[in-house]
Image (tube, rainbow, N blue to C red):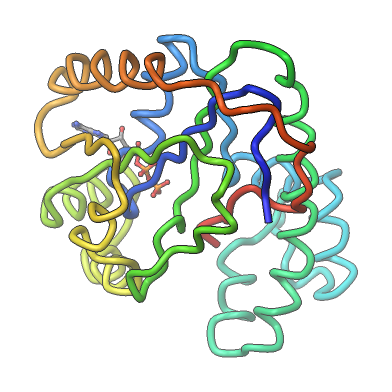
Length: 229
Ligand code: ATP
């Protein structure tokens, strides 16, 4: 259970793979939002020297280390793909550490008038449900929505996915409709990048208009979000 931070507005930002969450998050940061991005934190903790990297190497050894010393994500994916126990072990290493770091970043803005944007890829689960208690801290939810074929094109063109892989990953996530059902604001990212500015101006104005949550006890959860891994 997460309680609200003392007076700080926290917004959940979510969307399917390749929908443009990071792009939208950056545009919100330009407008003054403080970003907390679970995936970015995971990447930092999984970089050589990071606490999660060390824990993973302890469990799976050099098989998950690339020649350049960084984490071999493909090797990790292969280990956990069809093995529930290994996946559980991975989550057990990643989630608590990420939760701690997110908590630290959230606490750092206590007592300020910051608007915090939490990038939470899995805010809506694959079955179309969400966990209200887990996200009780959120004053609102922004969903980045994009036409499926366009998202696939972008993942193939800019991110090196094969079309099959992109579609398979999408099929394992919540549907656009399910995600939109949780949205206070939907950002349509099916058009060119320039089409985002006006939408983001409106979204930012909406965030600023939200009442600051009443002061409550400090955050009690280990985790304010969930990663896409
Ligand atoms: P992931 O689910 O992997 O975290 P994401 O939802 O954060 O992805 P982005 O990384 O923001 O999505 O966008 C996916 C790719 O599409 C990026 O290469 C980004 O530059 C590009 N992109 C995003 N929005 C647009 C747009 N409106 N027009 C063209 N390219 C875009």
